[in-house]
Image 1 (cartoon, rainbow, N blue to C red):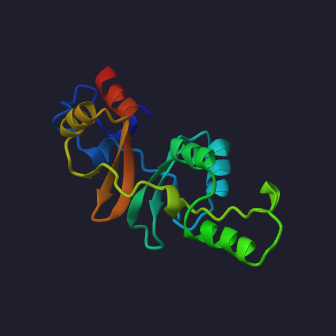
Image 2 (cartoon, rainbow, N blue to C red):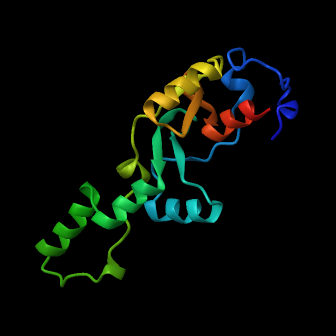
Length: 163
Protein backbone atom coordinates (compact mmCIF):
# COMPACT_ATOMS: atom_id res chain seq x y z
CA UNK A 1 0.00 0.00 0.00
CA UNK A 2 1.44 3.36 -0.99
CA UNK A 3 1.19 6.55 1.03
CA UNK A 4 -0.65 8.27 -1.81
CA UNK A 5 -3.35 5.58 -1.62
CA UNK A 6 -3.68 6.45 2.07
CA UNK A 7 -4.05 10.14 1.23
CA UNK A 8 -0.66 10.96 2.76
CA UNK A 9 2.07 13.05 1.18
CA UNK A 10 5.41 11.32 0.72
CA UNK A 11 7.19 14.19 2.47
CA UNK A 12 4.88 14.09 5.48
CA UNK A 13 6.49 14.37 8.92
CA UNK A 14 5.90 11.12 10.91
CA UNK A 15 5.09 13.27 13.97
CA UNK A 16 2.06 14.62 12.12
CA UNK A 17 0.77 11.27 10.82
CA UNK A 18 -1.91 9.71 13.02
CA UNK A 19 -2.50 6.03 13.64
CA UNK A 20 -5.91 6.20 11.99
CA UNK A 21 -4.29 7.38 8.75
CA UNK A 22 -1.73 4.59 8.52
CA UNK A 23 -3.38 1.60 10.23
CA UNK A 24 -4.62 -1.53 8.50
CA UNK A 25 -8.39 -1.55 8.82
CA UNK A 26 -8.91 -5.25 8.20
CA UNK A 27 -8.22 -7.10 11.43
CA UNK A 28 -8.73 -10.82 12.00
CA UNK A 29 -11.12 -10.99 14.96
CA UNK A 30 -12.32 -14.12 16.74
CA UNK A 31 -14.91 -14.76 19.45
CA UNK A 32 -13.76 -16.06 22.85
CA UNK A 33 -15.92 -19.19 22.51
CA UNK A 34 -14.22 -20.37 19.28
CA UNK A 35 -12.55 -23.79 19.71
CA UNK A 36 -8.74 -23.62 19.71
CA UNK A 37 -8.66 -26.30 17.00
CA UNK A 38 -10.77 -24.08 14.71
CA UNK A 39 -8.59 -21.05 15.45
CA UNK A 40 -5.43 -22.99 14.50
CA UNK A 41 -6.97 -24.02 11.18
CA UNK A 42 -8.05 -20.45 10.37
CA UNK A 43 -4.65 -18.99 11.23
CA UNK A 44 -2.94 -21.56 9.00
CA UNK A 45 -5.37 -21.09 6.12
CA UNK A 46 -4.98 -17.30 6.20
CA UNK A 47 -1.25 -17.31 6.84
CA UNK A 48 -1.65 -15.23 10.00
CA UNK A 49 0.36 -15.13 13.21
CA UNK A 50 -2.57 -14.25 15.46
CA UNK A 51 -5.88 -12.55 15.97
CA UNK A 52 -7.81 -10.18 18.16
CA UNK A 53 -10.39 -11.58 20.58
CA UNK A 54 -13.61 -9.55 20.69
CA UNK A 55 -17.01 -10.04 22.25
CA UNK A 56 -20.31 -9.99 20.34
CA UNK A 57 -20.32 -6.19 20.38
CA UNK A 58 -16.83 -5.93 18.89
CA UNK A 59 -15.24 -4.91 22.19
CA UNK A 60 -11.60 -5.83 22.72
CA UNK A 61 -11.06 -8.74 25.12
CA UNK A 62 -7.49 -9.73 24.29
CA UNK A 63 -5.18 -11.23 21.71
CA UNK A 64 -4.26 -14.76 20.70
CA UNK A 65 -1.31 -15.96 18.64
CA UNK A 66 0.06 -19.07 16.99
CA UNK A 67 2.48 -19.38 19.89
CA UNK A 68 -0.46 -19.45 22.33
CA UNK A 69 -1.94 -22.30 20.26
CA UNK A 70 1.44 -24.06 20.21
CA UNK A 71 1.80 -23.86 24.00
CA UNK A 72 -1.75 -25.16 24.44
CA UNK A 73 -1.08 -28.09 22.10
CA UNK A 74 2.19 -28.88 23.86
CA UNK A 75 0.64 -28.75 27.34
CA UNK A 76 -2.50 -30.63 26.33
CA UNK A 77 -6.15 -30.07 27.06
CA UNK A 78 -6.65 -27.97 30.16
CA UNK A 79 -9.20 -25.84 31.91
CA UNK A 80 -12.21 -26.64 34.09
CA UNK A 81 -14.23 -28.26 31.29
CA UNK A 82 -11.42 -30.68 30.43
CA UNK A 83 -10.96 -31.54 34.09
CA UNK A 84 -14.68 -32.27 34.42
CA UNK A 85 -14.54 -34.55 31.36
CA UNK A 86 -11.72 -36.66 32.82
CA UNK A 87 -13.28 -36.75 36.31
CA UNK A 88 -16.53 -38.02 34.84
CA UNK A 89 -14.70 -40.85 33.08
CA UNK A 90 -12.75 -41.78 36.21
CA UNK A 91 -15.76 -41.58 38.56
CA UNK A 92 -18.03 -43.51 36.23
CA UNK A 93 -15.38 -46.20 35.90
CA UNK A 94 -15.20 -45.89 32.15
CA UNK A 95 -12.08 -47.08 30.40
CA UNK A 96 -9.55 -44.43 29.53
CA UNK A 97 -10.51 -42.58 26.39
CA UNK A 98 -8.17 -42.59 23.42
CA UNK A 99 -6.90 -39.19 22.26
CA UNK A 100 -9.32 -39.33 19.33
CA UNK A 101 -12.21 -39.64 21.79
CA UNK A 102 -11.20 -36.67 23.88
CA UNK A 103 -13.19 -33.60 22.85
CA UNK A 104 -11.35 -30.39 22.14
CA UNK A 105 -12.85 -28.45 25.01
CA UNK A 106 -10.41 -25.55 25.04
CA UNK A 107 -11.71 -22.28 23.72
CA UNK A 108 -9.89 -19.16 22.64
CA UNK A 109 -10.78 -17.57 26.01
CA UNK A 110 -8.73 -20.31 27.71
CA UNK A 111 -5.49 -19.46 25.90
CA UNK A 112 -5.80 -15.77 24.98
CA UNK A 113 -3.82 -13.00 26.62
CA UNK A 114 -6.28 -10.52 28.10
CA UNK A 115 -4.01 -7.56 27.63
CA UNK A 116 -3.09 -5.95 24.36
CA UNK A 117 -1.08 -2.86 23.59
CA UNK A 118 -3.45 -0.33 22.11
CA UNK A 119 -3.48 3.29 21.01
CA UNK A 120 -6.27 5.66 19.97
CA UNK A 121 -6.76 6.53 16.31
CA UNK A 122 -5.46 10.06 16.88
CA UNK A 123 -2.12 8.94 18.42
CA UNK A 124 0.93 10.05 16.43
CA UNK A 125 2.78 7.24 14.70
CA UNK A 126 5.97 8.78 16.10
CA UNK A 127 4.75 8.13 19.66
CA UNK A 128 3.59 4.63 18.70
CA UNK A 129 6.95 3.80 17.07
CA UNK A 130 8.78 4.85 20.24
CA UNK A 131 6.55 2.61 22.37
CA UNK A 132 6.95 -0.31 19.95
CA UNK A 133 10.74 0.03 20.04
CA UNK A 134 10.89 0.30 23.84
CA UNK A 135 8.60 -2.69 24.33
CA UNK A 136 9.96 -4.69 21.37
CA UNK A 137 6.56 -4.98 19.69
CA UNK A 138 5.85 -5.80 16.07
CA UNK A 139 2.23 -4.67 16.11
CA UNK A 140 -0.24 -2.66 18.17
CA UNK A 141 -4.00 -2.34 18.09
CA UNK A 142 -5.71 0.91 17.24
CA UNK A 143 -8.92 1.39 19.20
CA UNK A 144 -11.74 3.81 19.82
CA UNK A 145 -13.03 3.19 23.31
CA UNK A 146 -13.06 -0.62 23.55
CA UNK A 147 -13.74 -1.10 19.81
CA UNK A 148 -10.92 -2.35 17.59
CA UNK A 149 -10.50 -0.02 14.62
CA UNK A 150 -7.29 -1.32 13.12
CA UNK A 151 -3.78 -2.64 13.45
CA UNK A 152 -0.46 -0.86 13.03
CA UNK A 153 2.63 -2.96 12.35
CA UNK A 154 6.35 -2.31 12.22
CA UNK A 155 6.11 -2.85 8.45
CA UNK A 156 3.52 -0.06 8.19
CA UNK A 157 5.94 2.28 9.96
CA UNK A 158 8.80 1.24 7.69
CA UNK A 159 6.68 2.02 4.63
CA UNK A 160 6.14 5.52 5.98
CA UNK A 161 9.88 6.02 6.47
CA UNK A 162 10.71 4.48 3.11
CA UNK A 163 8.70 7.10 1.25
